[in-house]
Amino acid sequence: MPGLFITGTDTGVGKTFATAALLHAMATLDLRALAMKPIAAGAELVDGVWINEDVAILEKAGNVSAPRDLVNPYLFREPLAPHIAAERKGVRIEIPRIVDAFTELSNRSDWVLVEGVGGFRVPLDNQRDAADLAVALGLPIVLVVGMRLGCLNHALLTAEAVAARGLRLAGWIANRIDPDMKAFDENLTTLQKRLPAPCLAVLPYLDDHAPEHAARLVPPKPLALWLKSLV
Image (cartoon, rainbow, N blue to C red; front, top):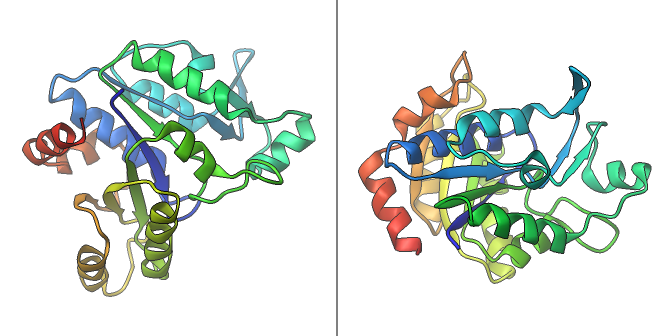
């Protein structure tokens, strides 16, 4: 079942932004693609419905509609680490439920992008973490690197963690979250040399934070060839 697991070097590095940009880029290739965010923390009440902003962005970016409970099986109102939010709500995050939702979404589309929660090793409870979810899904990993001071260490450690779980780091995206980052080009070159996967896109800092604009920076022909190599 074609899919990707999108993880990040940390929380707030632009996983949703990059995932939505990939969805828009896939649409230009006439692919039916959608994303799911299995675990979301932080929600606002809109017209009587609790909505997570990231989930709303992903739903808008995809070109396949699906029930909200499949796109986002676990929604917590407080913007907390998932294991803390789940414990406060008296809920256990069940990985098989997420896998089942992914399978159902796969039957509706060509590609399903699964956006992880926080970084690769964010805890889900006292024993399991987001890496266990990635293993259960068994999808190629795309790493979103938040380009800021410290990103080299975070990116390389995450790549090692992915390999240690027996998963494939299939590609990575550089997302410039700090517009004033010094030595940006040199840091980018270092990552290109040391990460064991191709760089799919370099996303600049955008004032409008519009993923459809960022999608124009994802080269379509290399993207098509890369996706073909994964299936």
